[in-house]
Length: 368
Image (cartoon, rainbow, N blue to C red; front, side, top):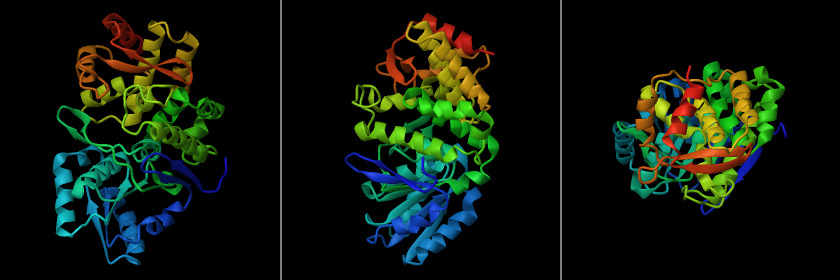
């Protein structure tokens, strides 16, 4: 794949482009529509200086550009923080033609998307993800969300941005553990659709686990293309949608049913990709026990994920808490648990209402 910046189109009723490459952040200002008189950049404290630089770039052509600083991580995704953002937009006189920019990691882009979708019933949104996880997952696909005491992302909506800019230069300053956690979502795309991702990781796991690795740009591009293709056919996660092997956007939730439960049980202190890594191994074990997947494919999960430093086991004795948390998962239908599983690599399927005994057995297989 080209070392030059690439543009991945996300098709559908509200199409937009995802721009990927080094130094492409300079294109954010140019991506702001001429009709916008006001721009609000939502960012975490860790990106204060970079957000100010972006503000100055946009202010060269726009009369009013403000920054809205929100908490780091999952603390940003609350109704209180969203209300604070709405207040600032209201006091700034934001209209329907003005633009919100989400500048930060996945939590920031989730929040910014929700704020943009709900202010005046929708204002234009540009996402500028700065972490690997946000580039390949949160900022692409139009999902927005905030958390409640009952679970993660239970409040939100589908709201596509008008542009996503993935400047790979941001990854150079990302803490190593955060970069590796982002690989969880990248590798997930390899298991559900694009096995070439798995091959690239297996070729040199140490290099794959670093932002400076030779395949970073290709891994990001391939993961974004997987998501773009899936959401183009099923933006709103309709059960039985046309994409993703006949199961639609739900395919992107591979590993997420248990992964989200781990995040909740751990009080959202775990990195998302680490929890999803364990969730994928659990889903693979569940697939095996259901007679749908081979032992070799299950072992491949452990080998690829562990090779880059992602966890593949979880502490024993937590099953009841995890099971209770899974019952609140967004994929649950009428109290019936639904899991994305595999029948082979890149061949996803749905397992609905599995026997409780094989759930317990699958958990036992990943327990440390």
